[in-house]
Length: 197
Image (cartoon, rainbow, N blue to C red; front, side, top):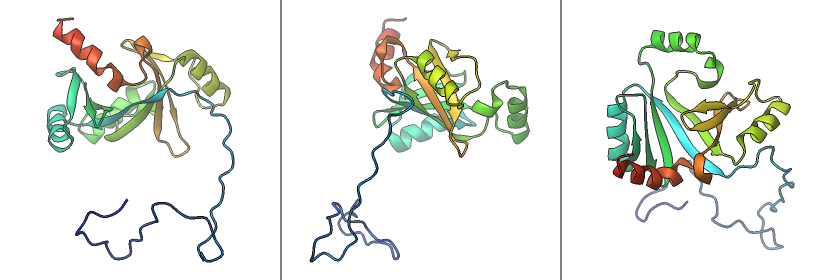
């Protein structure tokens, strides 16, 4: 990324060339290396479905994301616990969490999936859509990445949660109607709401 015209590059910051060149006789840069071939992925993904963020106050969060990013709400479950909208074509789900640390601890203790979903604030998970959630679950279970007996049903979708080696939550979701992402469903959901359904 290049700085905008008229902006100085901060001290200590080095910009990488936009297109690295292979080492030539007159080029004293290190040679480019070829990355090893990737193995076939464990899970066949359709797309990134959405990102979820836990917040203490849904109204305040919706106002912030609208003001800063143009958050375009297409599912609003207030006074419930979730609002889903678009930011730059990506669906972002805001989820209300308990505000007090003791309430967060109590929610974790009461939840049978506390080790997966948690009740902490901030970034919650990145969700990847798949065509077959049952096959995805079977592959993840065979690889030792989940101990659950099967996908969970949340509303009209089915999901499987896992954690990466550093504890980041990852969600695999099978959406209805063959959709690849929640963002893709936004026009359908808005049309249904406009019809009163």
